[in-house]
Length: 538
Image 1: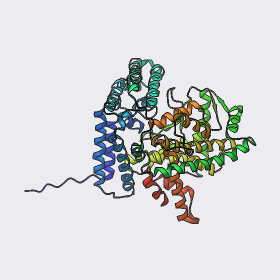
Image 2: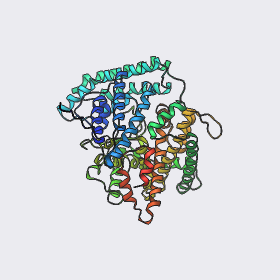
Image 3: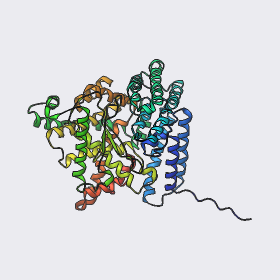
Image 4: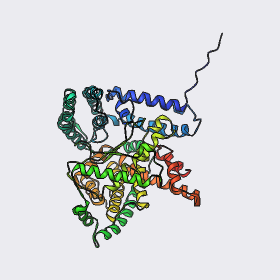
């Protein structure tokens, strides 16, 4: 008898590539965001059965990774990233969080809509694919509704303010966004809009009365979200105290800069002075977008060859204006796997027609270069495993983008006290988010003993970040519906800074910042449990 040879076990590289192929099939919406299978017309099945299919992919991939040892550095890093990411995602699903995922920014309603922003519309074939995908919107939203109904049946209800906000968002898109599609896809676009309208009506009339009156998720659920968002387990008391200390440090810096802008003034007076300065104002969305493009292009030209060697495909980050109804904060969509779809930064107008410049330069650095566009674009070009190359980790990515803002300050690239106040406002905004997010969700009080409320959180965001009330109200809704995500910016930045400091100590006089940045970005995305120690060795 001839013995049968056991098949060779897959390598981590093979597990990673197989995972991406299977993920693209199971979650086509996320595949679009990853720049995969641009010819697909499918949308994700958000029903309980569809979520379980994705969960089973996670479980099987995690088991394969645990049973396999890396053979080289890309595999070592790739295993760290993918296993951490999958464990975090499984934690979210198994805690029932997908059954109450109602959010203006992170729920299937917004994820499905963004797909259509990323689809080309130039040729007849493009329009044919667009129409076929639009025709799949009703089924995708119906599956999402099934998951929400399953959640209600077991007491997994979303907070009422989030539900009402998404109901409004659905109505806005139904009446505006889906009515603006080319005439060639008018029929499926109207059907997609009708599906959004119907879901919004159901959320308002049926779900909202059964929604939760609790705005916070509680400490146990918060730890699940923190593990997913941060890739580590937090000491919540220590982190909450650190957030208040960091906010106080930044406010002292802000006070000194305000004195330069309007001697004898406080922050609100300096902010109002800048908001009324004609030299700080842009009129119209087109002028706003064009100016942001100039800022992004200028930063790229200045930094290339000096602090970074930026590959040619990343020398331009396109600036776009998303449709009304989007969340108020700017966001980035990365390039496709093959870079044929460019990276884009999106700046919502939130109905405004006049825009200030002093507070937007730092956001352009955060979203484009040296922030998300440089980081995520570079990752696409690195010799990493496939899932790692396409991966994103919130604390790693948002931490880098906030570190990028700080780097521009360290390099002296904010051209005026006004622009530097914009940077410090952004820093204060991210710091106060740490304490708001932890406080709202876990019940920790303010230092003066007051309990957190949405109105108080919005007021503090206005006071420290300088943003108007409509924006800060939108931000509070975001925190309520997306626990721990708001902490990833400052806590991620803290890890990047600690890793850089450790590398500087180890390198001594030989430490080179440009070389360290290249080595640090070459690590790819990692959770905070692994990031700081890896950065220290760069």
